[in-house]
Structure formats: structure tokens, C-alpha cells
Image (cartoon, rainbow, N blue to C red; front, side, top):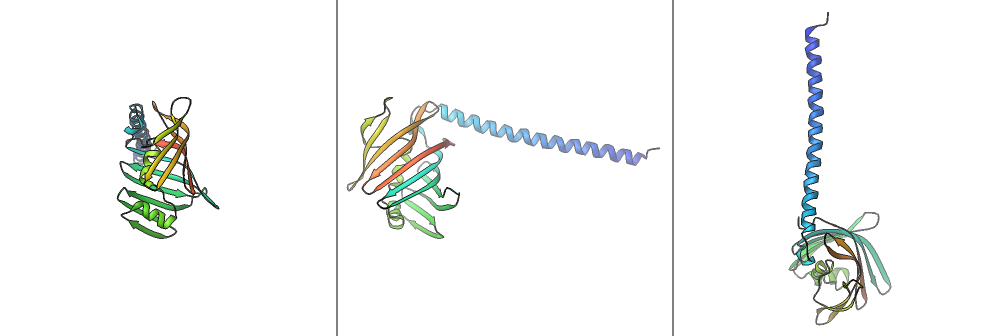
Length: 213
């Protein structure tokens, strides 16, 4: 005859196993539900856009090429923008992080090669440490296709192609919006070539995420 204690233990074990499986299934469905809600919110935010100026927050990733006389460099980038605050991570194509640049229009931090730099003059620090007069605060608008420049040429669909922008009394940039990509109902840049004296920066934006999240 089967011992009643063994029988109760077996039933208890089966119930515990079933309960554990139910918990796992519930957790999986909960995670999928959160992902779906996040995706839905993202889609709603994107679909409501009617102009790039409405993009207040974004995450973009892609490739960057920097060309100066006698020296060319390339990297991948992961860029998070929240209003005026930015965090740009530069890595090699092998995934090795080489620099982390974060800041606001009035402040910047640069971590590179085991060193840490900070300043209340962002563009001056970049020029001193990296050697390029890069308008870091203007770039967050340029990647959205926004600028305070003169449009020299247009694409066949009417989108700006070449734009001349003066960033200071002594510096002028030629922005070449080589291609665009759809983001909901609007078009945002996919590949941009930014040129000034002795410096060319090419940005290829492969992915737009976390719009106004």
C-alpha cells in the first residue's frame, strides 16, 4: 500500500512545480507586455511627429569618419540626447570604447585613454584635447536636419542637400545631407558630410530610437 505521506509529498511537489511553471509563464508574459507597451509608446511618439524640431530626446547609433590632412580616423558611435544634454560614446569597430563625451552647452566631460577632462567651454576643450574645432552643441541639431544656415542645393524631393552654416565669426561649415531616412511621417538625415577648413566629419546614422522617451 502506498504511504499517504509519500502521496501527499508527490501531490505537493507537482503543485509546486506547476506553480513555478505558472510563475515563469507569468513573468514571460509580463516582460512581453512591457516591451509591447514600450514599443507602442515609441510608435505613438514617432507617429505624432510632424517636424524634426519636435524631437527633444533621441538615441542614435552609427558610424563616424573624421578626415584631416594626412590623417583619417573612423569609429562607431552611440549617442543619447536629452533636451540639451548629450552623452556620446565612441568605439572602434571591434567594440572597444575609446572616448565618452558628455555635457551640456555650458559644460563638458571627456573620458579617453584613461584620462578625464572637464571644462565650462565645451568646444575649446575639444579643440585642445582632440585637435578639432568641432561645434558639439550644433551637431545635435544637424543630425536632426535642423540648422541656421543658407540652403545652397536641394534633393529632387525638396529636402535640403547642401547647407552653408556659420558657427562663429571665423568658422563656416558646409553641411551635405547626402541621404535621408523615414522616421514616422517625417524624414531625418541618414548620412551627413560636414566640412570646414582642414576638417571633414561624416556621420552615418543607422538607427533612431527612444524618441521623446
